[in-house]
Length: 366
Length: 256
Image 1 (spheres, chains in turn purple, green):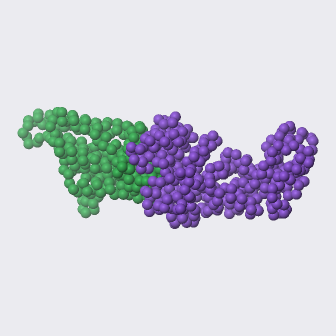
Image 2 (cartoon, rainbow over the protein chains, first blue to last red; image 1 turned 135 degrees about the vertical axis):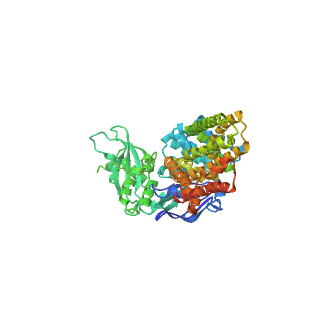
Image 3 (cartoon, chains in turn red, cyan; image 1 turned 60 degrees about the vertical axis):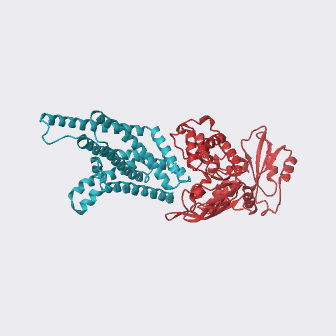
């Protein structure tokens, strides 16, 4: 079956500057593709080329087999596009604007009210139907932007940073909505927020400096990086806090094990009650020759030391680590990347705001 | 056509939702009314002088050629000064706010976008012209002007407005700043207006300059004369700038 979107060796030059270089990937029907890359990597440029906003300097883009440059109107009709800044007319009412967007995208006049009703329901805009767009909050505007992208029920949705500027609750709602929309439709969304990718996307394309760095499912990307031996393994153990002054038996026991590089306390350490230890195991396969899952071993060591064990989970290489490895080593920032990656258990990336910032790993008391 | 109308409809609604259109309508109505009152007064005074001197002295006054003609010629100057205000935000505002991305990725051609914008501006200009019918109605109440020359004059004004709006649309598509667009348009129109005076020097060069003057072509229309030469000038002038506007949009696609 032919892919819904085919980006075929696309390059884009702005004068002498090469924004996108030989980008090649395909998106199958019903897939949600995450387009990941640092700011300025060429994400927006690529999306603008896919949506027919600008022509590529080289290569071509096919939307359900239609060349976006050669059959622009037919191809564009199949696309719903939410640019980085939602294209809204502040003086219009929400429903009036959606009606305009529907007609502009070729919905026949008689079917416009129905299309607007569906988009309003889909994006939960019922309360603000008759409100002037200029008076809406940022979250609502983003939703109106999403509504205009899907008002004509397109086969392809292209969303440029759909959750930018939203609060955590709105981010969650938007991601759920995108998941709902997938299936029938094909979605391409760009982001620089990593958890968004693991939550919403079936497949990831990582680009940096206009070049494709990796293309796979989030899980396989992580696995691939782990197999390459670049990763350290992280295991989180929930155990009991140590009263001040008494020796920390749990950490001593864990550190004594072969291959354990460090044992860090994650989060605040309460004198009483539970705490979480993060055990870093260096190059689990290559350097020590120790293979496989170390969890049983860790648990036994802990219990033998007389410490309680409340929970235990394996972190593995995170998507963040993959991303940093792929997007920073060209720029010679690997060491910085690894500092950040070292802290990167997936569970702790949380709600995305912090991914851009460099975080210091928790102090290692050794 | 449907696409152009969709765009034009939104454009008109947006203009009517903002104060700019009303300020413009008000300014035009006020200035036109001022010219009207002024010319009417001179006309009436001249008529009274003539009747004091006793009729039959050869000169007669005619509403069409002695009042309406000059009124229409003055209206042309008003149009020249006010059109930049009507056209300046059409495209530049879309560029500034990013809504241009919605238009350029919709299944409509660049030509339809430009034509829709042009139609909207022209329709608003039509409203302005319609307001002046009120003044002329007064003349019809008190005298019997000929209708045909008046229609010719309105045709001339409509064509003049179309030409100027097309030029304004082009400058609006060059920049994201509507003030800059307005000033560029105004500057260009000023030059085209002054060509009329430069053209009075005569010679082949003078004739060419005079031909390029936008207001010069209105004189015949104001007298009630429609010539192919003037029709061709205005239509090709508007077409030329609309074409350039489309090319400007296209080049914006390449530049992103």
